[in-house]
Amino acid sequence: MSVLDVAAPAWLDEDCSLLDDAFARFLAQEVAPDYESYVENGKVTPELWRKTGEAGFLCPAVPEEYGGAGGSFAHDSVIIHRLGVDGFDHFGIALHSAIVAPYIQHYGSQEQKQRWLPGLVAGTSIGAIAMTEPGAGSDLQGIKTTARKDGNHYVINGSKTFITNGQLANLIIVVAKTDPSLGAKGVSLLVVETDKVEGFRRGRNLDKIGLKGNDTSELFFEDVRVPADALLGAEEGRGFYQLMEQLPQERLLVACQAMAAIERALTVTLDYVKERKAFGKAILDFQNTQFKLAELKTEATIGRVFVNDCIARHIAGGLDSVTASMAKYWTTDLQCKVMDECLQLHGGYGYMNEYPIARLYADARVQRIYAGTNEIMKVLIARSL
Image (cartoon, rainbow, N blue to C red; front, top):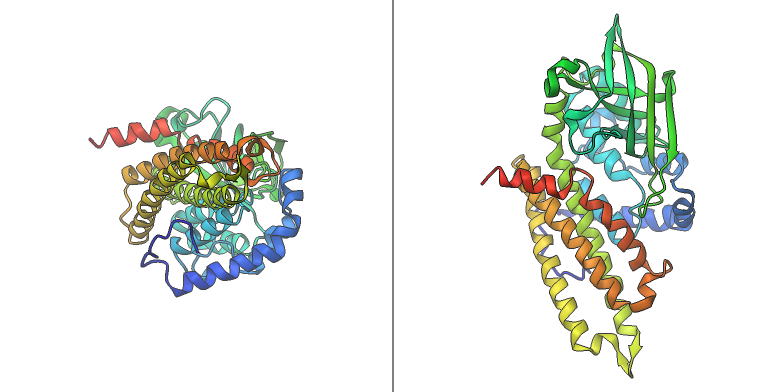
């Protein structure tokens, strides 16, 4: 039972509930025993990716004809939520299933879908998307990576950074300029199968504040030749529009992650303040504790209802960019506030890594940065006024 006591939305049907139960068992049996080693090593293993795919928990929204379960974002959101509330959110399933696969599903040709989607579903291919560059973060028009047409190939040159799943990914969607003179209209997306090319190199697994078990890398492309049919979409120059069309789902995904982490933080904090004593009584018995938790539960409930509504809109095809931006910025700001307040209620123990709240605190901070900084979200919202 959730600490938030929010009524189940209509999209959380019996099929989603069964998926949630099955995935919870999978996490307990197959992920939990080795999870701390993944965090310590900075990445999960290819074997775990394959095992997760074999069990049917990757890319649930991919149609059955390409090996998927034919679900919707409702099924993705269930998996994202369970990863967060059970404390396994260093496993980069969300990006693989709900960001990389949809680009191929929405913009790939029939042949491209048949070539790439089954591997993503099975976990034999691990997905990543290479947008950010050392000199271009939220400003996607400022990227320098190029893809030059050379006969029946493209030649890719450039570097990327902060790429989630970067150490293990072998199917990478690369954002590159096929015509640097055209600005946003010269951006294209190309799919690089790293096992089949020369000139591709991974940099270091970046040392982050949090999410240490989720590999994040620099990537380098030096005259990487890919076949012309690696272009995603029917023509060059569609990349920026493809990115803009898919960013609402990416931002909703981040909001889902935020709400799951908030729920976990409140749960572990309630357990702690009920047991920990000071001045002869439980921490929960102090009025300050009660008021703080009352505020946080109220705000978390508001966030949960809002995100549930956004998921419903998205499943129906009606989630606009502005609303997705609102969800991303507000829930991630709230996430950082909740983590700070919950850590404070733990006192000195909250600063110790052996307590879940410490990891939740460290993991939260990046949420306000990726998928577009919260400042960019406010710019997008302001344009709608």
